Length: 479
Image 1: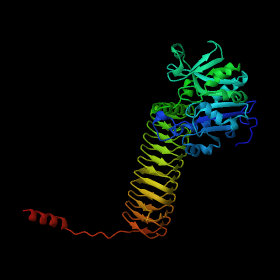
Image 2: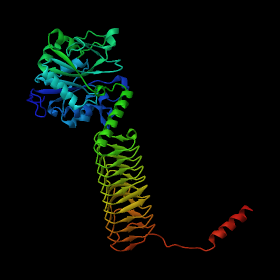
Image 3: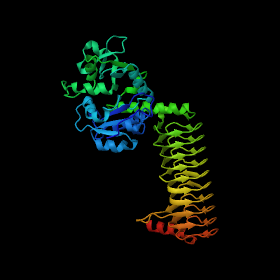
């Protein structure tokens, strides 16, 4: 168990605050073999977004993720965040989740409850919920929202239309016709007084169709105990939307990605037709860069200033320096591209590719685990793998490094200023010395000294009249 909490160093709250994230459910409506909270939007698990928001409010040591279904998979997926985990081995409802977390959460003055499947919630909204709860000296504070179509959500019953106080939350199935007309819904986000919560949580019952302990029932329990139960509305109802179906996940992903595009544009990036671009949450793009339609920027990709990423390119976990041109239909994965370089179209830069300053990697060139030096060029139909290539090197069309012998990978070294003729085959391990030339169509199996010319091909033989004789023989046979 974590240490007994002190005042949250990361927040401005005057009390000890914990955040509990509900992540134990299966998500049966998704019809999936995978935990609901591990489905991805914006390029990372839904739960990871909620944890990231929580970590902006309190330290990771004060965040408790309540896990159940596929618990170990969830733990492994987000364990690197430094949060705590509480196992709800038997999932008997949201109220039961806080019951099993009692030992972890009871020492805190305030317990904020977030839904692990609602990834659009923001830190300012969570902070507002907590501050309002403190200011009102409440036992329970609900975060609510007005929905045009509130079907499926619990309705909030206030003491009066203008009152901040709440009498109860009525679930959709239990609501009467009048209550179903209420547009204010319970979001599933709460702030509790820790002592009040655990003084009364034992009063929850399973007297409902699902035989579960509902956390929503705490509103009525605390109200009857003459404890203060209040509600505060979020200004943006989209923040509280959950991901119960595939359609909802896709909708949340679209919202998140469009918001990411608008964030980047506010920071000085031009994105043409942003609705066509797929940009993950953790991507960074420098000012004055231009992203054309149908680009995908995935994972932890970093793009510098004054770059242009042209249409249909896909960059994953890649680092792009300033003033780089990425031509259409380029694919990178774990690559680095230096300042002023030009890559594509139709280039594929695989993991470990390090493209130097001012270098060119062109049409249908594939690289893997290479370093291409400053100003070097490989413009056409080439495979370069497990190679170190110096500055000012020209690699002719159709060149390949034969790096694999069927058992092991071997390295090719090409020193500065080398010219590799078209259709050359460099059989590793091999070194081409500084300033050397390799003649076109050569198969190089031995090291080439500096400033030498290497030829590895048969001498050309010309047999005059051979073709005419062949045709004549064929015609006579056919006749």
